[in-house]
Image (cartoon, rainbow, N blue to C red; front, side):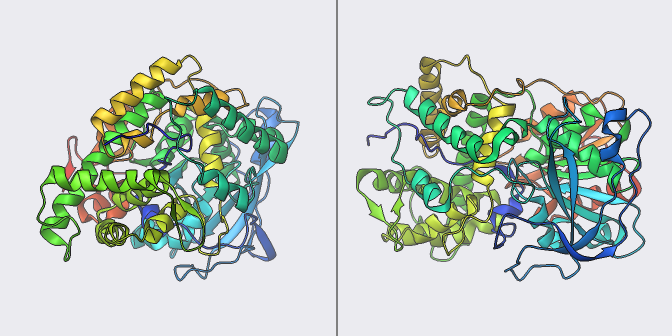
Length: 529
């Protein structure tokens, strides 16, 4: 079977909490704008400025927050009646705090009891909305944690409701996602670079300097402003996936302001784009094989029943390739691409609870109906059933990664060798995940820096949670993060799927809650299963 290598629109592999894979975090909201409106439901908190805050930043740290009704329309059954929103002003460029500003939007669920402070939450991404995550807080944190803390989600700078960058309108983004595969035998790598240069230029034209200020270090500095305006002397934080990187960067910048940090699905901050992509490709291949095994043993009407593992994998590979070999059109007239199919398969693999959904979607696709797989791909990009993109996750994902994890020295020959390696370790997904460095080489904004180790020397203990068969943030990433952070403790979850705390495992939940509520770390070497 002939495979065309690597798409210019490579499959999106956000490192986001497994909750998002089930669609729970992809709320149908009417616009990207949010904030507080009407009469405040609670008094604004006075900024708790910690000694040592630079004079030029104190006006941000001492601003008063006004909590009020959220202005965005909610069209989901999981919405919380007591959800509140607020805007916080932060410097656009921390090197010029007296210059332009941008807004970070927060959403809050007040504690059920006497609040001991705020628990900041980030669901991952980069590009996932923490504001929307609060709509489903009952799935994200336990009742005991909700009783004790004001749970506060936020959209990092440039993301969704926090003055989210705008690059393409809905029709343009549909067209961009429907572009055909990149063929390195017929097209030069420079084509990818040129396409992303044009895409980035569209972002800059619409959103200006913000595109260059969406790096994780700046977002972590914003977190410290949020801590202060919420009235907390130390930051208590729950970060999933990419959110672990955001939390680790925060701890490295502000070790003396670290309270209780939980980092679930650790990201190794030293990884290059090539290394991260290879690890993810292999991880999802492993989880797909697990799905085949579970499907054959546990799922009624399994679409790969009574075939060998290798034959099942081959059937799925041929299904993906089939939409390259002849044009497949969805009911709404859109072209179905191999990348759409790959994303449609990847989504349910983020959590074992998605296995039956994957069986149904693949079964329909084997019969010629790709609508369910396309819908899952749409959900990955924040597209609703009416064709509206309710978040800017796709553009934010690219903007942040190209600022955080670029490598302009990678050559076309190295990319080609990397592509061969991807196809070797992950025959199903590898062909569709390469050439990410070419995209960022074309991005028209200078990177903020290269990946480097973080140690957070002097910080209070940090709890890192790693899942042994996590496809999006492989277990050894959590191990590496623990090795780098001076005060980290690793909690292991021996299972499949992405992240652990939201997976419903009582052992994991009890260990994380004991740390958040009592400050008690699990014993060294603790493993839950």
